[in-house]
Amino acid sequence: MEVSREIVLPGDLLSTNPRTAGENTYVEGNKVYARVLGLLDKTETTVRVIPLKGRYVPSVGDTVIGIVREVSSNGWIVDILSPYVAFLPTSENPNVRPNKKPNEILDIGDTVIAKVMNIDPKMRVTLTMKDKLCRAIRIGRIVLINPTRVPRVIGKKGSMIKLLKSELDVQIIVGQNGLIWVNGDRRKVSIAEEAIYIIEREAHTEGLTDRIAEFVKRRKVEMGFETEEKIPEVPEERLR
Picture 1 (cartoon, rainbow, N blue to C red):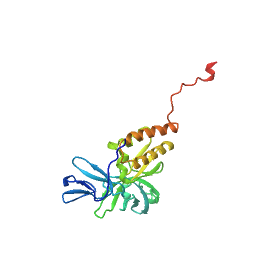
Picture 2: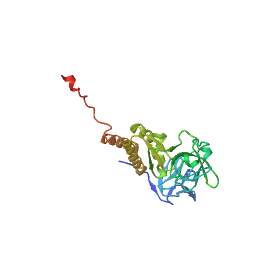
Picture 3: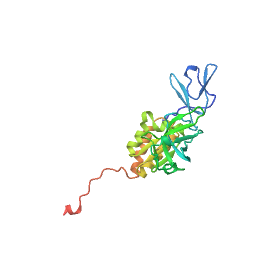
Picture 4: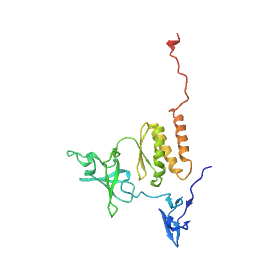
């Protein structure tokens, strides 16, 4: 039987020990309450709430996938699905060349993988592409999920992503903002996309990794990637 984490509402009592208050909680009268609707994550030392819904709030070092919305002489405005504006300076794009205009390198509508380099006090976000992970995306597929589900898609120590990569032999880069790039055989990419949506939908349940492994293996068989071993046929000329 599957066990789901407890869903809590804003104002629900979570603990009577104020020292355990964690993310998305508040303390009142030495008691800890939920600040948002979400999943209760409780340990011996900490109690926190994982939001069921929410927009992406950037942090320095995050990998993000964004869409170019504006081009200027000194860089690009990039939509990272956040309330805050993100800017990629030309100085932070290693593909910039003296003989090329910014819109010849990245134009409106182009998709990029970048990292959050800086966030100023007014929450203006500066991106960089000076990392081996970063690139302009010209091939593959983008999958969109709720950013609060990203940790579950990645898994503990990257276990879920490693599972999908090894079983399907695809490239996957997960943006902390909920956009995920998947590249490889078109049918295997489709299986990965299906699996990611299952993870998003069932993130609060136990035994999810095992179920995803079974799902991927079943879909591979259904698509003809894995079949029962057959005795090789002998060429007709060798039978004569």
